[in-house]
Image (cartoon, rainbow, N blue to C red; front, top):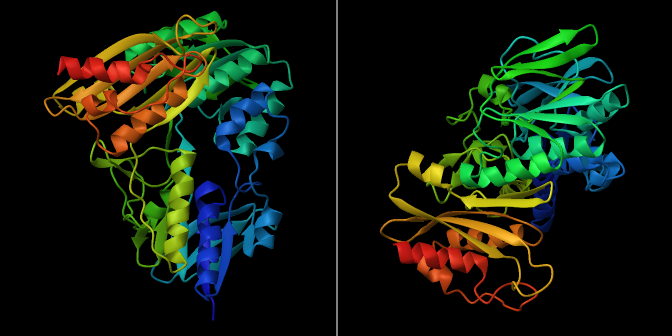
Length: 451
C-alpha cells in the first residue's frame, strides 16, 4: 500500500515538499498518496509580490500564482482548500480538519506529516488592534482584502512598521494616491540595516511624499462605527482610513506547540538538516528555525527563498532520497522608492549584540565608472571579525544596479572568506558596470586595512 503523506500548508514550502516527494518516490519505484490542506483559496503563490499587485505593477493575483490547485492535482497531489487543520495527534497519526466550504469536521490519518504552516503577522497588543480596517499582509487573501477596502472612500493610510513589507506597502499606497504616514519604534526605517544607512531610506521616503515618524510606539487604535479611525502613538495621533501592519511575523506553530513538538526560542519548529522534526513528522518554511552559518546559532528568518529550498530538501528525504539543508547567511534585498537596499550576514549592531570583536567600515562609490552617464551613488558598509578578518556581514544602499552586488558578499560569507581575500577576488569589470575596483572590493579593502 502507498504511504499517506499529509501536508499542512499549500504554499512554497508545503507544495515544494509534496511535489519533490512524489518525484523522488516515483524514481525509486515507490508510491505515495499525498494530501495537502490549506485554509486559504490559493496554492504556490508569491507573497512577496503582494505589494506590487496592490501598487498596480501586477494586474491580478493570478499572476502571482506559480502553480494552481488544478496543476497540483494533475501532478498527483490531492489539494483541499478552505480546509483548516485544527489539531494534530502525532501518537495516533491523525490531523483533525475543518472543511469550511462544507461546514464539517474530519480526521485524516497519515504515515508522514509535513508541517508548512508559515508565519502569522504580529499585531500590537494595544486597545483597538482587532478593529476592521487593520490589515496584515501575508496571503493573497490579505492582499485582496486590502484592495477591496481601498475601493471605498479611503484617503489616509498609516503603515505601522518600517521593515520590508511595511515600506513596500507604504510605497504601493502612495502610488494609489493615498496620503501615507509610516510609524516605527526604531530610530530609522529598515532596522535590518544599521541606522547610519537607515537615514538614507528615511530621506527617500520623505522625497516620495511619505510622513515618517520614528522612535514612536503604538499605544492604541481609535475606532468608529466603520472600523479604525486613527493610530495613537507616544509621538502623536495619526488619522487613518486604513492601517497596514508591517510589524513583523511569528512562526505559525500553535498547532505544533499543542501537539508537543519541539520549538526553539523564536517559537519556530526545530528540525535537523533533513527537515525532520520527529519520527514521521517534517517541517519547512516560515514555521521553522534555521541554522545561521554566520552567527552559528538558530534563527527565524521567514523568506520564500529558504522555504522553497527547505521544501525541496524535505521532499527528497521523505520520498526516499538524501539531501541536507546547509543553513543560511541572512541575505535579503528590496527596493523602496528610488533606493535599492540589501544586506547579508551581521550588521554592526548585530556584531555588538553578539559580543564579537569587529571593525566596521563604510564607503561611498558609484554603480559604474564615474565618468560615464548614468553612474549612480552606492554606499557599502562591511563588518569584519577582529583579528581573523573573517567577513561578518555587508549592507548596500544605492540607486539602480546596486542591490544585487550583495550576492558577492553572500558567497564570501558562505565560503568564510576574509575581507582581504574578498578584496582580491577576480570580479568582472567594464566601465558600464563598475569602477575598476568594484564598490564591494573597495569596502573589503578598507576593512582589511583597518584590521
